[in-house]
Structures are given as C-alpha cells and as structure tokens.
Length: 369
Image (cartoon, rainbow, N blue to C red; front, top):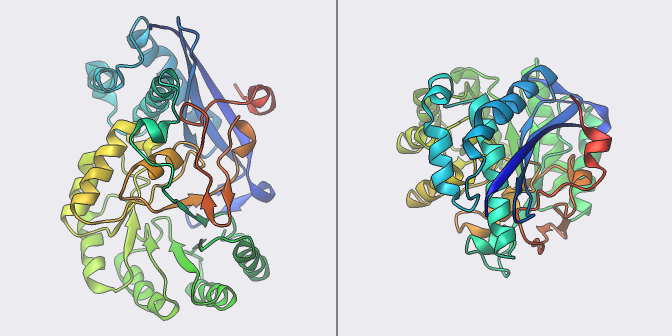
C-alpha cells in the first residue's frame, strides 16, 4: 500500500449557542484543520487537529500539511506510522521552525490519518487495534455548559440538565474578573448537582501563583476534583509550588506539545491529572508515550479533547491509565460514527478506523478556505 496524495481541509463548526467564553478567549466556531490521506489500495485515512476557528492561523496549519508534510509522505506505506512520524518530526527544515504549535498540530492531523488507515486495513476500530477491550468502560464528564459567558441561572440549569442526562461529572470555567463570582458559581453548581457528582474547574491559565493558592484552598469546601490549568502553561516550578500548597489536585497538559514537557511537569510533582492531547502533541504516537510515562508515576490520564472526543475515545478505551473523557458535542455532526454517550458512559465505537471519517456532507456544510 502506498500514499498517492493528500487533501487538506479546514472546517469551522458553530459552538453551542453561537458563542462560548472562558478565562482566556471567546469562540464562535471550532476549527477542525485536517487531511484526507489517499492510498492506492483505496483506503482513505482522515485526521485533524482542533483550533479556535481563526482562519489565518488555520491556513498556516493547512499549508504546513500541504506544502511541508505531503511531499515527504507521497509514495510511502502509510502503515509504517511510527517510522513516518520520526521522518516528519525530524525533517531538519521543519524542526528548525517547529517542535510546537503549528508544525506539531499539522503533524498530529497527518499522523492520526495514518493510524486511521492502519486500523481500517486491519478491519478493526482503533481501540481494538491498540489492544483495548470491548468490556472497558469510559466515563464521560460534560464540559459544554460551564462557560463564563453563561449567567448564573444558565450555569445552574445546565448543571441540573447534565446530571439528569446521566453524566457523572461536569466541569465549569473559572477566572472571572471578580473573584467572588467564581466562588459563588462553584458553590451554586455543587449545591444543585449534589455530593456524588464529580465537579472540576478550569482557569485556562488565568491566575498568578497567589491567586491560584487562594482558590485552590477555597475549592476544598466544594470537593472540587481538580483545578485545571490554574497558571501560565509552561511554569513547571510555579505549578510544583502550587501542588505543595493546596489539597485540590492540579490537571494540565492541553498546551504542552511534547513528551519532554510532560516529563518535566510529572517529575517535578507539578501535575496530578495528566491531560495530553494527541491533536496538539503531534499525534497518537507521542500521546501514548505520555500516557505510559504518567502510568509509571501512578497518575491518571484524562485526555484533553480538542478533537471533540472522536480520537481520544479510542485512546482512552485502549490505555489502562484512562477512566474518564470530557464530552463536548460540537463536531458530532461531521462524522459517520460520532462519539456517543449513553447513561454517562461512552459507547464503544465499532467501525474500523479512528472514528474520523467525515460524513459526505461535512465539507459542503462547514468547509472554509
């Protein structure tokens, strides 16, 4: 089997209620910048990364796929995924300008498409190809309701609805301009969901160290399971000090682009819930390395889902360090086999591949150029 050509694409899909906001940004559309890898065996692989729907930077990722990676892949056997990952990652001219951000996200899209081909060729869903069990359970926690631009009433109503729908956990955003607002909202959500439902909070890197310590200590009152991205994303020493200063565990990883970065946080004791994202790390190969590293430190892995769950449901079912995955449904209408939650658990995908195959009308409905 040989790769014949690549077809990059950009999708912009509307988010819930047309606009969501957290402590760092407001978003109206979620971007899926990706590629269809075609082969002479008529097996097509689909892969993508997730973005904030900013067309200018999405084009940079698309162009990296089309102009930098495509020439290196044409004529190669797509099933040699790890060897091809090394070839692309180590290509000198790309590595000179990359190793994070645009080049890693483009690499992720390509590499996911290669794994999609490899699993389809084996006629297996990716989780099974990676050694997972169909009896594995993957719990969903809902992230699509705790946005900062929601009023208190909307926040509480969404939380109540999520519990009624069977979700065993939910996450809300913090980092409001007024600190009292965050405390009030966390308290209100805990009251409506009761003591048994997991509650997580996410600051999106908003705070400095004193503020994070203050909130981390206050959150104990409401049994917050984790405090996500409390401070600047690369601050290993600051997160290590924070972890020693509060009881609330720290979760982070969506802004880290290499296994090396995760190594530094893990070995420093600066993270307790490891949130690698294959669509930002450069693909499934480095994501698996991070998950294995976390497991050796007895740390749970809860993938960040910039892919809106499609890829990470497979990885989380397959890897023993994973028990939960966040649920955000924005891209479900794009895929032939959308990620689905029933009674709080992800349904195990059955179709061969990585669940990334686009519906026939997805490009027509959501493609931008």
